[in-house]
Image (cartoon, rainbow, N blue to C red; front, side, top):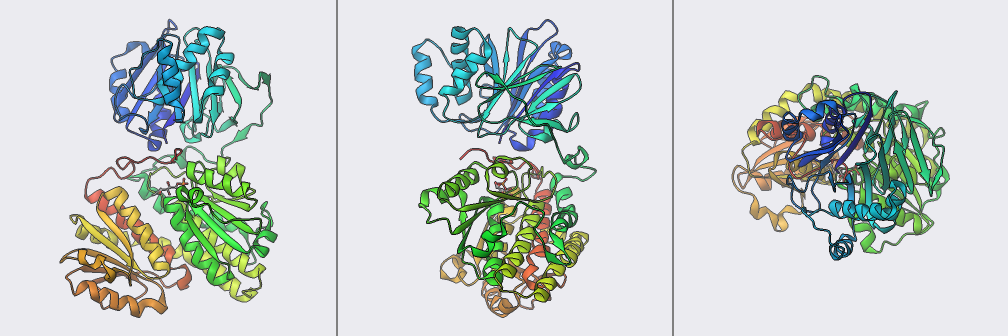
Length: 606
Ligand code: F6R
């Protein structure tokens, strides 16, 4: 949510800031801005509501930008105050400029203090309050580190801050709490960034800034200190390269990421399979926790939570462990009953989702063992959980999550088999059969659906003008419906609901009118007959029922036939169909597929 970039070095800084912001735009895109020192070391600022192109257009009329060597930039997802030129970052005073990710919770109290001190405000943001408080401390301390330390001592909430001081044109300062920030290491140039993708064009090496640390970055040096003492940090290298974070000829990142699913599944599963059986021995995973655990909680948000629902079915049926799947933003407030005998699995692509992170911290507080399933290496959730299993999907840039769900559910399926074996619920040969299906058959089934994308595209053409739509299913298909529905509504803006097929007639069927599309998931063999009856209930009222199944569903108006696979893993090719349906419908409606309105990748506010 929001993106930060900073550059200092021999090159034109504004060029790097724009490049970085372009890579970060997926994190928030309702306004953007940059602050930089010009050739004469004057501190300048350019910002604009809307997409990054608006800032670029303004910069075209700012000749000073050409001579800049040091600057910070920001792409915003509005929290305090509507998207507008004034509310865009950077914010500051004559003495300094800052960019900020996160939320300052005690902004009301701080603003009142500053108003009493004579400060005035032009924006509605919490960031401007932080900037002016820093200005106040800077006037008192006359040196940046002390002023920043006094500022962070006062801020409640979460922040990653990039700061420029007017009198120090050769330095960028950075601090953070509960919002990620890294320091990119270049040659004769250095960076700050909220996300590695922003700097991959220039470097893959970085330091991870931790809470309480202050980074002082010049073109030739990076100093990181904690409580005034310089510290030596471990240098890290990103696994991702720049190609992985670029579109590579696809019309949209979302389409590219769907195409990457088969390979991402194999990459994620390969290191955890030996002799076609699960093998997590190379991971720092406490398998004894899996063997003994009395109850499993899976906590996540959005698509990651839907992956948890699929996992629930597998853990319960294979390993016979009771599983609760909980929405992270609700988890803390439901006073969850958890203790040392429970295992809490947090699923997150970004590893930075604020509600999921808060849920993880609560679970640890309550003494449960915590396991993170995360895609971004070194992210907060990955670092704080007792154990972590990384999904190896590569960067996911499109706001709508696709390949992350596929690898999360693949990895959780393997873990469910491991858990079932540890608990003596499945014998080796049955486990081997299922793992073979997962590792060899499922990626091929997903690839086959990608090859047959035109069939799905034709359905997208059929539904593109509808206003409302239903996804229905039973059992695992109901969980899959939830994901299909979320994907479609978030990027095509068609109102859609996921319903347990048998529940529809208990009220909601009154919304079924002639012509309404009903996507009926029918991949659970034991439930196909019952689904047939539910489909008849909607077609009798004029609905256009489109089934997704292994074989033709005669009750439906049409069926998308998915490849034969162990039905317990049918969600894998089936979800690809639903992702493609959302994608092509969004394209057909002329929507901004990768950056749907009001959304942002990586939701770092609660
Ligand atoms: C929907 C989507 C979101 C995320 C959710 C959790 O397409 O992407 O629902 O799944 O915001 O994000 P992570 O997985 O980063 O915790």
